[in-house]
Amino acid sequence: MPFGFPRQRPALDPAWRPAGSGLASGLLTRGGASRKAIEGAEAALGVSLPKSLADFFEQADAAEGWVAGDYLAMWPMEELANLNRLARVAEFGPGLVAIATNGGMEGFFFDTAKGGFLSSPMIGLGYIESTAIGGTFDELLAWLASENPTSGEALVADPTRFGFVVHEVTPVLFGGSPTDPENKTLVPLAKFAELVGWWNAQVGNANSPDLGRRRS
Image 1 (cartoon, rainbow, N blue to C red):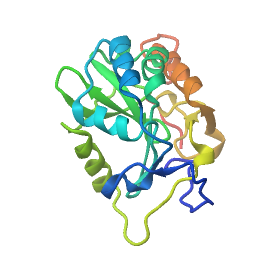
Image 2: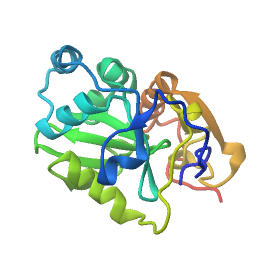
Image 3: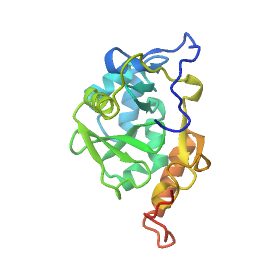
């Protein structure tokens, strides 16, 4: 569970609705992306999104919340191309398109070359080995549910936190603590993408002597 995203049942604004049924029922959305927005993102990215992903975006844009015990924060379709540009995804993960995070430092990507989805730390993209998930968006949801299953009452996210990401002030890859609350901060999504791009540029920098050394 990412820092800053508590498991709770807030008073829900009626503008929010479940993003779907089954594993998607813990995700909240205000509505779907237009076909024009999806086609515009595809044109800007120079890719064709898989049907399973495009269909989900058309049903539930910027969906965010819980998939079993794991958090998923989908990126808004109208911002998808710009967020990938800010995070410099094409530079550090050629052929990948970032589509979501776990509300923190783990990202989810569509692999245009292999036609499937994968998970990778946002900082360390192309440096740390990624994890293959599956070929469809439903398989991504199933993978999340299997990683951290829950029992009992379903979890519901707090929409007041939507659009923010838990960022590590000093990333773990550069020696930051993965557990110290003082090393965590909430930042807006666009700022997070910009920070990801900057930190990934430092991975191969000789001025990063602590690369790979973790502090508890």
